Length: 393
Image: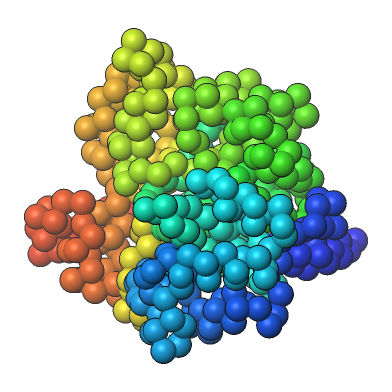
């Protein structure tokens, strides 16, 4: 039986083929296309523009200025002219009149996530590339233990971390694992849609906030009436989306989402902060019952000059469940470190193994350590009770 994916057009044509909506496209020969092409040649993941300031780009996590002799700093009028040359009149009107606009567009085969905003009353923008590959966990230097995060038929799986640290890529890899291995129906709710999945074993329905649904919360509630097995929520942002995601998990669905937080404990605390004090204990109870796992991820500079993910992994067991229910979050790191055999580990444990494997330098390990003094003590007599880093097969 032929298991190859069905043919679909690529890039902007794929977007129109699957959605029926014309994609915003940056065409060759325009000023914006020349700027993007130069940034792509530098290997940039992000491009930032502000009226009156030099362009800035981010390569392997490092922010640098674009030389003025290559591309002069834009003016407010210059930015609007570049947008008018490139984008549809409707979008240009939104960019000029609204304070913030989120969307995506294509430049050749590359898809970009875009935010247009104002600062001091003048125009700004931030563009980020969306990787086109169908990444799986083995492609991302992630531990093979993450594969089992999506084995449960119900519950909530969160991928957290600071902005720009690969959360969306990791979640897409988890979803792709499901797509390659399980016959299920997957509904995604995104703002905007970043990556178009091609049906393999799974069937996808991808919905964009503002285009297909009014909000994340509305999208989740309506998704539960559409016979999903898995719901992917692009980002949990507010009280309504938190509650809707919990409700979906509690009623028998596997829910995956992302959240901005630096650690597992901070992520749980941040979820609680969206609720009034009198309702926070109730939310902790919901989390204790429904939070299957949480991954906190950061990208660290490695010895090869690129970046490698360092992850903290928490899975629900009795100790985790009790600590979350009681909001005794200081216990979480100790529980994770003692449960490596259950697929859990702390950020510093993984950091130590990256160092021992020669992936990162000692200086990098100490710079990014959560507890630098404890890490220094560990490094004097390094011993790990069980290997975390194992090659994916």
